[in-house]
Amino acid sequence: MTDATLIRGRAHVAEMNPGLEAALAGKYDDLVPGMSESLIDWAYGQHYTRDGLDNRTRQLCTVAALVSLGGWTGPQLKVNIEHTLAAGANPREIVEAIWQMSVYAGMPAAINGLNAALEVFDAAKS
Image 1 (cartoon, one colour):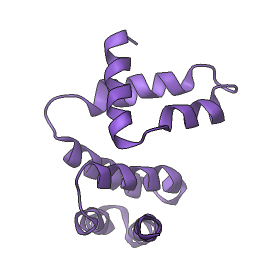
Image 2: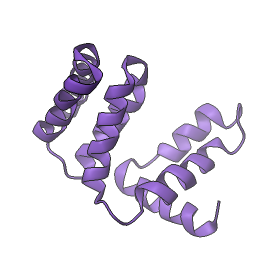
Image 3: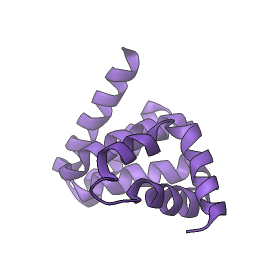
Image 4: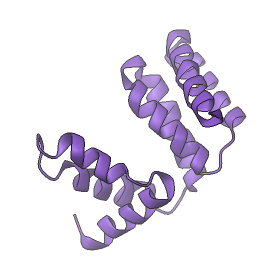
């Protein structure tokens, strides 16, 4: 972990999901001290802010991967669908990325992904 990657990660999360680090810290840092800071540094500061892919594409890839991993990733999938919307993807693009996974991860995984997307889209309308 470096100061630069932690700062980059925090700046990225501030755009995508303000309050994420605090929420993670409140839930996990007593159990695993420093977990929230490590995740912000590693996932966001070192990976999401890399050159080579724009954030929208990177988020669509993340959604596809989480769908492929299956239903137990539901909470992370919902958060990343929100992040994907924040990164500029529209609901149709997200649904198409999820639907594409039916070919590779199976219909149950795609249906679970579509259900997660519906929950996020419905919540955004409220």
